Amino acid sequence: MSLADRVHPAPVLFVSQKLPWPVSDGGNLRTFHLLSALAERGPVTLVATGAGGVGEGEARAALEPLCSAVHLVEDVKSPGLAGRARTLLSALALGDPAVLRHNRNPHLVRRVVSLLAEETFRWVHLNHIDVHACLPASGSPPFVLDTQNLYWVFYERSAVLERNPLLGALQRREARLLREREPAIFRGARAVMVCSEAERDLVLSRDPTLRIEVIPNGADCSQFAPRAPDGGEAARAGRLCFVGDMAYAPNADAARWFIDEVLPLLRGRIADLAFTVIGKDPPRDLLARARAHPDVEVTGFVPDVAAVLTRAAICVVPLRHGAGTRLKVLEAFALGLPTVSTRLGAEGIACTDGGDILFADTPVEMADTLARLAADPALQRSLGDAARRTVLEHYDWRAIGARLARLYDDLEGIRDS
Image (cartoon, rainbow, N blue to C red):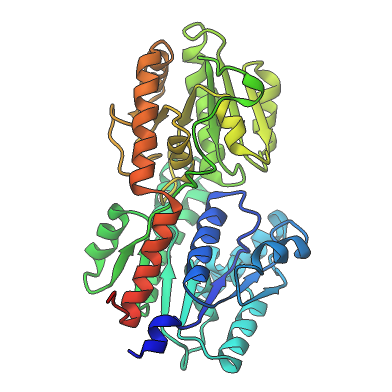
């Protein structure tokens, strides 16, 4: 390894099916912060699909200062149920997982192949397995793959809760095909990134020859810091909140479950009870629930999640399925907000029941736990303080970015002198 290589790390082509802007959901947050970390380390070229619901100018203004170049291609997804039906029929005919067929973009493939032919990259960073199909069959630089979550685990869990027999069968098909597809993709990677030790153990149990690196999700501990509510408003003991992208099925399911199954058990037990669902694209049935229940608010998108969370007394994470680790938990921790979660909701995070979080998996358990916590300000403070320490020690984005940079240094053979 030459001195020049040590001083000037090799260029990276960062490929993402989804544009990491705006940072309005967990996936984009992770992608944006890891992209930023790689860009601090050395030159990065980003190629991504679409403009993420914002103007292309806004997206470029946010991303071009980080990157050597930003290439945006047209999104070809067919909108609505009709588009998804066409994708499904194509996937069934070809024997592909529907999610990979849905996210496949020939424009992205052509742009990646063109960039690899025209420019010299030492590494390709694949943001999720969706974009593995962009790589040419031969002649590509080595790649690092960020899983973000394990697709087959997601669909396996979704199928368990699915009441519609046809949808359940389709989800089991997705899980089966992805269990076969993901390991084959992983074996081609120089390193595979997962979000937690549990995911690493799961992947290695199927193929112990892989290089699996834990690069966890995180929180911006400077932005998400304990603070007084806006306008000096005190957080109400009965104000509960849940945050997440409501277009993501596990989040919408969690909000429905909490409103339908847990809130009825809490009414009359917590004074000034209020439940706020924070997150973009809430489905119509969630909005209808808010109209039907005066103690439920569904905000939709909010520009400053931290400010809204600060007005709450307790964060709840009532997730029943999904995969990966949840940034919503880490951001609540960073704010010092006491948190009650299902065990699955806090999966993969180094937290301890009764230490920095409280676990509850059934409606009765969650109602009892929330009632007890709402009545105990000292417990709220101790949980919040411990949660903040957990994030500062393990999950600040700056430290996680440095961890990613060390992974690339190690792959390039760069060692601290």
